[in-house]
Image 1 (cartoon, one colour):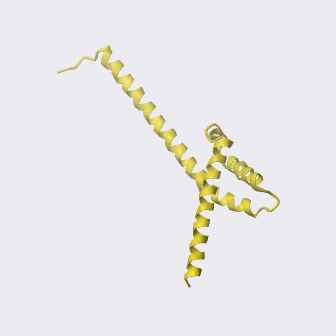
Image 2: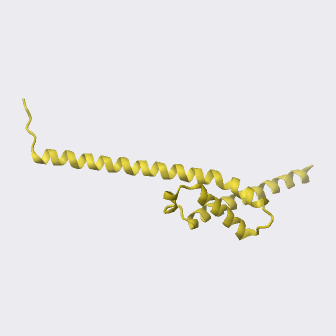
Image 3: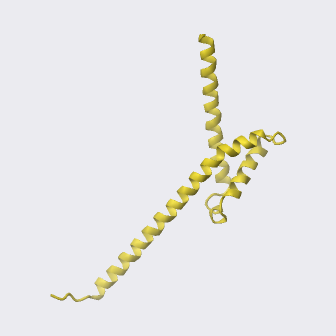
Length: 116
C-alpha cells in the first residue's frame, strides 16, 4: 500500500523538524552557559586569594580587580550575559561564603583550644 503525502503531513514534518532544531539549539546554549558559569565560579576563589595578597588595593579595589580579571577570562560573546554587575554579585557571594566558612573554622579551633 502506497501512502500519499498530503501538504498537511509535509507541513507537520517541517514544523516538527524546526521545533526539534530549536529545542536542540536552546539546550546547546544552556549547556554552554552552564559550562561558562562553572568556569567563572572555579576561578573566583583563586582570584579572591590573589586580590587579598595585593596590598596596595583596599576592599572595593580588590573586588574591581577580581571582576576585571573575570571579564578578561570570558570570551567577548558572554559579556552580554555575564556583565560586570553579574560577575561582581557572583564574586561577592562566593567571598561572603568563604568569609563565613573561615569564621566557623576559627570558632571551632578556638573551642577546641578551650576544651584542652
